[in-house]
Length: 165
Image (tube, rainbow, N blue to C red; front, side, top):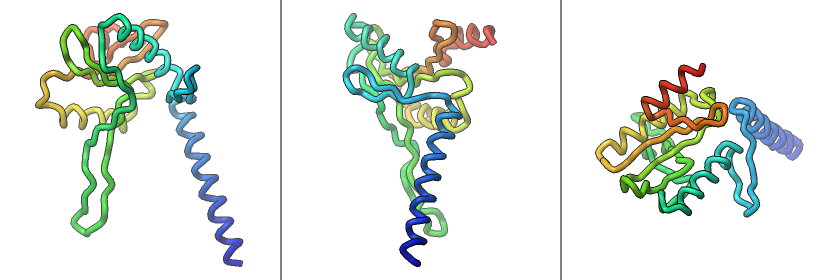
């Protein structure tokens, strides 16, 4: 009997995990993509933007292009009751050096404005707060609308993007 209960609990856990992944995909509408080199991307949009960045790196306009770089926002700690609180990280889609300015660029790619949810917004603000004393950093949120890329961190691009909606 105990063994059957364990099996049912494991099956329920696996079902919940699967449902969670399905809901996450439905919420953002993104599907993982594998390129010709076997690299797995979180979305088609992210993969497509990587092609642009790779071309810029080949042209010498950017360098040191990396992806999925983790930044610790809040370290793990114990609360007042002694409970362990897990750390909070932000994972940047891309990080590179802009050769013209020698600035480090931390870039996130979004498929649409609907993907900019409160969790992302709060993590993005914490990231900017934690790096506020570093002067040579530029932050970018890239979003594509009708074949044009907009940087929502740029006031001009943000204004142009908002006039389209």
